[in-house]
Amino acid sequence: MPSSVIRRFEYQEAARRLDIEFVTGRRYSYHDVPAQLVRDMRAARSRGQFFNRYIRDHFRFTRTDVSRLRVGTAGWSLPTADREHFPSDGSSLARYAERFPVTEINSSFHRPHRRSTYERWAATVGSDFRFSVKLPRTITHQARLADCEEALAAFIEQIGGLGERLGVLLVQLPPSLALDPKVALSFFSALRAQSRAAIACEPRHLSWFSAEANALLADAGVARVAADPALAPEASVAGGWPELRYIRLHGSPLVYKSSYGEEKLGALAAFLGAEGNEADTWCIFDNTARNAAIPDALLLQRLTSEGP
Image (cartoon, rainbow, N blue to C red):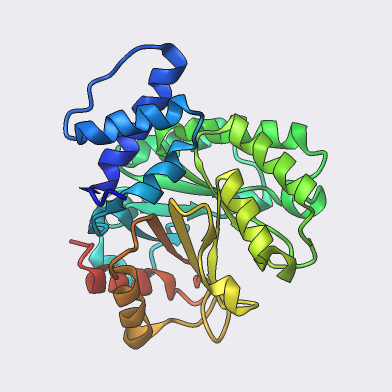
């Protein structure tokens, strides 16, 4: 088995072009991607192999650089005590985006926003900034992923205002929602068909943490959130689709309130920087109730040498 070393962005670009190539019949140049890799990918695809899995099985990747780690918070409110770390001019979002590369929009869970609102947010930030948007509770908690085509279409139309700055769709499920494989696959297939954004799911029923459930999510291209606090040991570990790790830190021991402190975040920083962690990684602090999210995110940035 070959042991060629390629960088993940080179693989992803090659995979993207390969998809275009086989749909359009046109050939593309692959610049920095090893020629043998391109030939093997084309051969695998022509045999009907799933090329993502083929490449994972046949090549090893270099360690993720810090640009693959994205630290941010739920929302972009800036506590008075922490404003010195941000530019003094501009809106809260503009100032936030000068320091952090991502944010998670949770308000979309409670109420819809106009497309023009998303367009305004997208225009406020730089081209490299990305938003994660939480699906509405009408879809996840009321419809419980079933018979929600109209609500899903409306949501997708609204968040289309983010354009290329939409990074992740966050699907947080109610604790009472057990896994129904047929419903889950149907829903995630519909979601995938309507948006190119990555999908992260935060289930909160134990039935979602079996090996079978993990395989279902992986095959559907859905990353399972690593959450803290975790309802079970498996819930603290990212699962599902391996190309994305989405970590949500809600505060512990007091949910939404407690800060994590340097000792815990130091251990997290060491874990995030460990060899073999090749996935795109989002780390979102949701402990906002007592303004702990921003200082915790700033500290993790410093500990991972990601921030300025």
